[in-house]
Image (cartoon, rainbow, N blue to C red; front, top):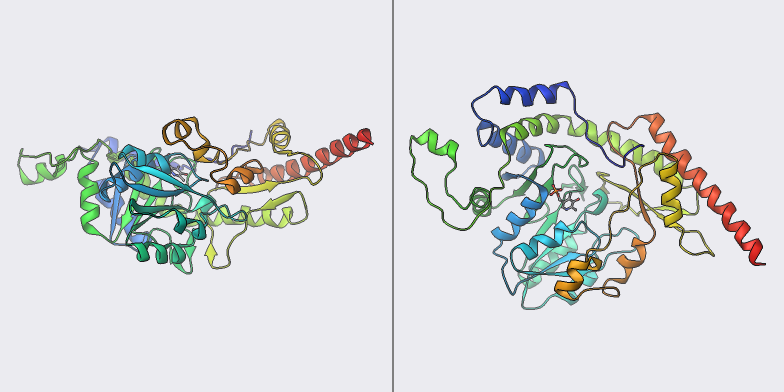
Length: 391
Ligand SMILES: *Cc1c(COP(=O)(O)O)cnc(C)c1O
């Protein structure tokens, strides 16, 4: 089965981790700062704060912004659950906003109507790897004096109007899960120009304690104080060593993702039942996911059958995502449900994620393309027979 996403690890990565295993610091040593600095430099921003996952990064961001009970944070309906969960971790309420039907990105026009005196921030999601419309969102956040957060877990390496992802919002969130652009097994990062917010998040990731073990060792001191309730969200030196090495290869990883996307794009242009998501002209896409919309005219939705047929052909297609407000937890806790974000709900029934990852060979890519082509033809025929029977 060709997976929808997969890590790319080489001997250098393995060596980098092994070296740390032989050193004095397995966690919170010199590699953390080295990784943070390399990442900040890549993005072109002042601060990068490493944490144990993308979810921890989102949580730290909500903490740093002071989100708490009674606060509302706007999130798009089409995203991974963690984007909304981080608001709930802090006792706030996520307010779901619908997406654009062509790009499935948060619809800025829909955002403004959801803002009230309790609204504290917007979390934009760069769904599949294309940046959301940050200029429009920034106009709104400036108008209401609220903050802008980017869940950029899909878009490391992307650009918006020639500005790099990681610099577009007040706080920018990344994940280093194995299916993402680069990996530390589990891991996450927040980038920001604001050193005060960065410092808050560094304390938050270490139980709310103001100094870490490495710093105390350097000062020859045992003294520490816990200033606030924090978590253990630290990223280990082993993981940071892996991250430093992966970051060097990121440009190559991105290049290969874009090559695959271009091939898919070219081929699917000839299939009327397959529609790739719209990419804005001022965006450079990072292609964490390659999502297609499937619709066979004059018949009921064929996504389920399409999914099964692709899996039978050994292609590990997937669906990203069930709109978050439809999950049982949100229905129960926040009284959400069908009808709240109709575009996301409708489009969700038609989307399918095709395999895309840097190590994917040309042969694998051809297999995916043939499987899509074959599946379209099979379903066309089956529908044809069904229509004839109906006559
Ligand atoms: C992967 C992902 C996350 C969570 O990252 P983890 O590292 O898995 O915790 C959050 N938001 C989006 C959009 C993601 O794709």
